[in-house]
Image 1 (cartoon, chains in turn red, blue):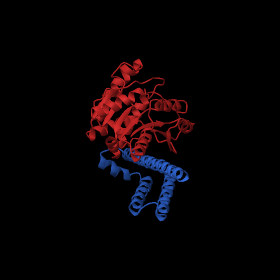
Image 2: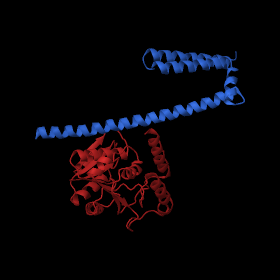
Image 3: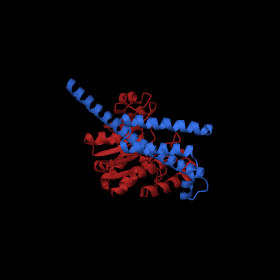
Image 4: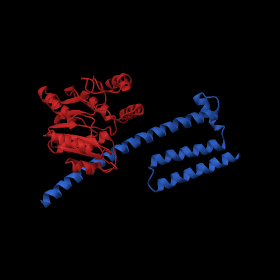
Amino acid sequence: MLYIILPAYNEEQKIGRVIRDLFQHGYTNIVVVNDGSSDLTAIEAAAAGAMVLSHKVNRGQGAALQTGNEYALLNGAEIIVHFDADGQFNVVDIIKGINKITDENLDIVFGSRFLDERSKVPFFKKYFILPFSRMLNNWITGLKLTDVHNGFRIMRKEAAEKIKITQDQMAHNSEIPRLVKDNNLKYAELPVEVFYFENGQGISGGFKILWDLLIAKINK
Amino acid sequence: MMIIQIILVLFFFFALFKVFLRFRSGGLKGREAIGWFVFWILAIAVVINPNYTLILAKILGVGRGVDAIIYLAISLLFFLVFKIYIHLEKIDRQITKLVRQDTLSSQTKKYEDTARHS
């Protein structure tokens, strides 16, 4: 059974369209983790036909993904897909990822914007921010990935059981590769298309991630 | 005695009184209460006779007693802020755990209710 997890915080404008797109492509188990949104995200998601899990207060994207993973595992998921609720990803990439994970007998597949030419990554981000972030992330996680903090991933049940996300905010994007490395999980990257209509994390967001990782290390 | 000394001594006595109240209500355990009690007593002693700090300055190899106190106070404050930060992180994780449990259990309950009514 396949579960698609969409962590969502104040996404009432876009979430309905993303869910309908997923249904149109034949996916049925769509779980929206409404992370304490103050808008109509939960109503829009339910109206579009998704299963909605609601955090009473906002806990962050990492926390929402872990809630989604636990729900999917409790309900017999064999494969779990992490997908953005804001329409950033292309639904057609999901089936490619599933085929890759089964054909190559992998535990987890990470999406990457840099393995084909479809994503129009902004110039400054592509040539200045991302190379540095990638170097730093690869050093922190111990995993050599061509992209950094890409929210598209597909994992098998066994991998989801081992990847327990404790980073509630955005640092989970570094924590997951770290756990993949620590648990010797078989991984690969998949070219995915990312649509740009907002800036995403700024430089201050990057510092916050580093800080969260450092505190987690001390707190162990 | 200078006015600042009087103010500080009064304030430290107030802090001592708070330690006593917290200990009596069970908010502070024995060892913690003794630690804070000794700390405020020493603070009062140093305010009344600042020359005591010279002993500390000599041990630490710092010129003036007041410098030794400032260095120690800053170090202690950093340590306490760090401890509070770590503690907050822990509380944050506990809140997430609770929120998740609540989300998952209310989902199960909703499912059971639907099953019962159908």
